[in-house]
Image (cartoon, rainbow, N blue to C red):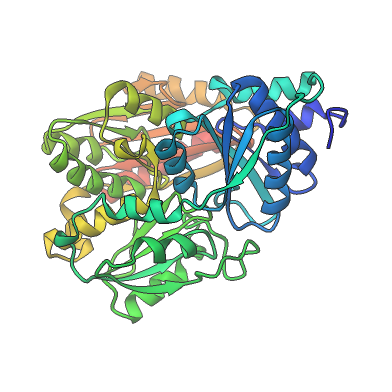
Length: 456
């Protein structure tokens, strides 16, 4: 792994996504490339030190070691956090003042994938537009020889401080002894949940807590229905108050109510917003444009200021900083907190929900019911050869019908009793459709109508 390693510019461009670097190991993402990314990070951002964490993926040690070598050879120091969740990395960068951080993870992707997520000081997200593209271009262009000074390496265990911080975000006097099934999916929640819940009055039914990056039970992607079947069964069979599923790096979480029903991320956003606004009356709350119309309605009803955002953590975090928003949420299970340096944390969202349910003294389904007054399609993907022409044709059709249309992210078409968003995938030849309506009949009819135009 040297500065002379051949560079495949086309491959590198394909691996640098909007918010991270991600690919199959070793055919796409190699230790050699990870080394170059480490050097590129220091070349572009000029940090004196970089915090590096990784999840439990099988390829994690070699990718992390190569990344660390690149940072050290470029002259910056490295603080190796070992195996942590992504939100623990963000916590460490914010709490200890590190100039930059890298998390080695492919989040919810299958076992053969790995990747790199980046942040600056105060856990500020790095995207293609805010430094990631420059790192990519620097790797393609090539570097000067390594720095004359090789950086210093140290290890640091941050999880005890992380767990204490998380517990400090709720009032222990307000939580009840709820029975909770937790599916870690053999991911990092298997390590962080026991530490965070230590001393709290919850009865945890652990599922797949063993750290195993081969995912022997199911992939750590709770958005796929087949991956939450076991959790739904355990919740019902064991009479749990609720269930929770985490993705691989445990920055996202998804809820199951006491009947085994899946609760979308936008409804979790609405619940957490209620609690956040109790603590910070009148504050702004950010939600992405795929979320239900019920989310801004809940924010307004609770005295907050709803702000609509593009999909994606870098956009939401930046808008939250600009508006000093107390909380932000996405339909995809990402939840962002001002008190966590505007970073996302499935753990903190879960603790907030548990406090809210405890205070309500009602089952989760009854807490959700008044917030959830509409029906949604979920995300529907379609392979499309020419997304731009399809979108133009659909826009012309609905504009003629008098729809309200905006292009904040893809195309959102709105009518009084239903709306949809249609946007292209950043990484695949797909168009993603989300539809919401006031009634099931309208939802079914309009979803079929839009899909017919997308796929014709």
